[in-house]
Image (cartoon, rainbow, N blue to C red; front, side, top):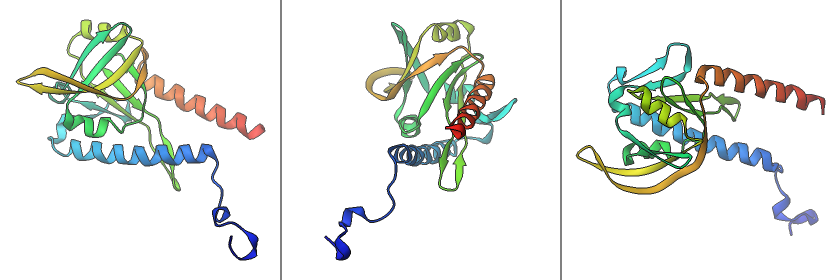
Length: 192
């Protein structure tokens, strides 16, 4: 007990569970974005380019995309990430995977302090329509850590994060739809 009869635990503002979750997500996302930027700094500038229709999507070159592997088991695609990529991918709060001309991993924007971390899409190049159709046939994507030796996956390790829903929608349209839905939800919450 402190002076005045208040417990020490009662000091300071109370933070709602929703705000605690948002803050935790923002902290994780800041670390993931920073790790992604560190990873990207290891490659030539032209190895990661912006999508021609939106600056919220970064597209990996065929060389960088070749650092990922995949396999399908049942209704789940397993996207293999080597340790160098797993450093950022394990913390990235991926909300949805889109399959169109590439495999896109999409992260929602989140409020962080007095600003907002923008949404981010990362496009993994797939050189063949059959591979994309194979991936699009799955319902879920699960990122896993793998070890590669001489260009061949030699060990499958642990899962990274939760499984992610796959949609066959174009990511640019998907991001627009998500922004519109979020705006409508905010508008509705103002009335209640």
